[in-house]
Image 1 (cartoon, rainbow, N blue to C red):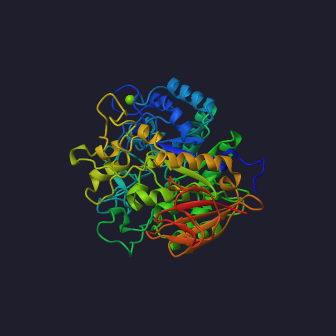
Image 2 (image 1 turned 30 degrees about the vertical axis):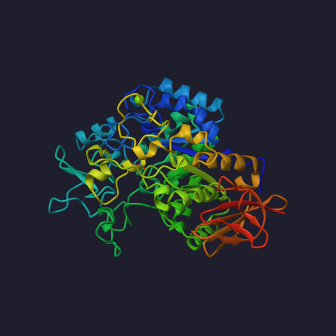
Image 3 (image 1 turned 45 degrees about the horizontal axis):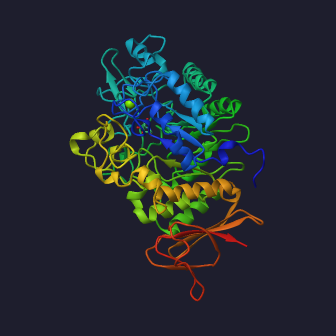
Length: 526
Ligand code: NOJ
Ligand code: MG
């Protein structure tokens, strides 16, 4: 039911900006805040309500901003605090809210806190990070593995101890068991709330607290060569510790005081994911990111099962959310192909809950070919050739047939194959992916049943996935053909098709209501 007390973020659609690759205003080849401000019209025309901007804080860029050297500043490559305030004001003026990316698990090794912490064993900031003695053989304190491969520990010869780092050596893990860390980080969040930020995506929230005794992780019985080194063990003791929830509650209280939203990045199975909503007395984040559509195989039965399982597992009052892709995972158009990517767009924007759309997916971009000598991503450089690198989903947006991203030399090359999918050309083409996204977003905005109404009757019938949105008079059935053959579905009045020519071939009363291959319909149920 739609109630007037509904928080803004429940009906909102979030657009994820990877700022290095969105739009460059100053010709240095790196996207920036003014670039975003200059392109707000594009986002308004697209019809999204909110942007989440990947990290823009001062950073040595060892992990392209996910190594933060100052939680309350702006990296000069992205602009200044004044540029940020101007962007925020302009976005708000256009009705677009702004989420930043908060990176609590680790800072940069160049952060003043870590510089102090590593300087001596008795430095007051020593315990702001996680220091342990070497194992008896001089090796790392336990068998924990970095998500980017190799030990999750780095030895520091200055003080003869190891520090914990779940990602790069340049990303030392903060010690959230230390109350001083907690209050400094909550202060950093408040700094941005006071400037008017509408919320945060929280980086690797489930990593934030580690087991107090640092036991070895158990081996992963399903590990196979090529999966990535991190999968050798199960991250039983290095992630998802119960103490993480009280921290989330403290963040939530602060966010609620500002009417802001928190979206937690959590890659865990559904039952574990649900614990990040917290409880009525101790609420967690508003939206624990739901990666079901990123992890699913693209068939109707599996999708139906995952949607049913996720919906059924939601705690009372827990609001759902859905996402098809992000800056870490292969793009949807590469995973399922261009035709099914249109079906995926309809799925994302007709499920119950807050959708997040990754920049470029609205253009149907595929994973870019990045020449070997242009590789930037530390993930790829550390474990090359396994397909784990993230550069292919981080190349600059093609704005025009010439590129239009920068007047300079882009930090990652635009894939020439992306140029024909440029935003300008697609804006003028009613059959384009961009036009489909615009139609879907406009319909969702105009139709409360689709944005926030109930969902039910979730079914797979052969290759067709169907579900019903809304109740009472405002009911819609969504029918999505995930196969490559025509499929017959229950008849209805077509409100929107994934195909650009909804009138032509659809209603053949003798045969029933036919979906063409890779076609989706939103149908009004009378
Ligand atoms: C998750 C982010 O999405 C990813 O890009 C980053 O490398 C890691 N967290 C470490 O911060
Ligand atoms: Mg720039």
